[in-house]
Image (cartoon, rainbow, N blue to C red; front, side, top):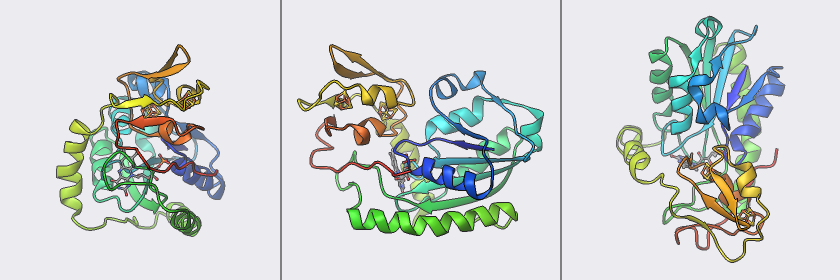
Length: 256
Ligand SMILES: Cc1cc2nc3c(=O)[nH]c(=O)nc-3n(C[C@H](O)[C@H](O)[C@H](O)COP(=O)(O)O)c2cc1C
Ligand code: SF4
Ligand code: SF4
């Protein structure tokens, strides 16, 4: 069984590839009610006896909505007996994301077996100095990810050891910057649509948190944001902005 969360499609692409390579067609996308009301969701493993968690790295840690799902879902006995694996996608490195994920699982009495990372095109654009990758770099990352995902599929199938991309200063990134980021850099307040908006509603329909409503043919952002940036990257008019932090920044939509 594969459970994935994805904003701009990178983690979804990895989930779909792993599903095909492992012949594991039971895939669940974390979105809507599963994220808004995780306490109402059952975590029930299937006959594979394996659950693979796939999600992007957010500020060198587990996306808060995924952490909340793991912490609050109802754990069924089959999930307790299952072997759990994590695959995170990151633009550069994951630091100690795997350790956070392991702690979350151990607290729920789950068996965290292995963790893996795949480098994918960067999607974070909300701070100075952060932008999408140039097309050549994005393509090179996607090409390299194909073999990386095959390696991960082989490792999961044979219970081989974890394979991580920690990068430098991992402890500071995950233990100092991550908590700061969650507290101070995840506000949806600066989101707005600029004059290029045509009122198509794509941003509202695609939001995994159902956080955008259309009012007078313009999107309005609520408070339940996962900071996945799908609304920004999938706007066909590039009309979603975050204060002035996204001025001149690129967009990314992962081909499936
Ligand atoms: C809020 C946010 C924080 C991010 N933080 C990191 C990070 O700490 N390290 C990193 O390498 N990439 C980071 N990224 C980039 C994503 O992890 C990466 O592009 C990922 O593959 C996106 O997956 P998705 O398309 O499934 O949403 C971040 C992206 C977002 C939106
Ligand atoms: S996706 Fe873009 S153009 Fe469409 S409603 Fe949202 S902001 Fe406007
Ligand atoms: S409002 Fe935008 S960034 Fe926030 S969860 Fe919805 S799509 Fe993602």
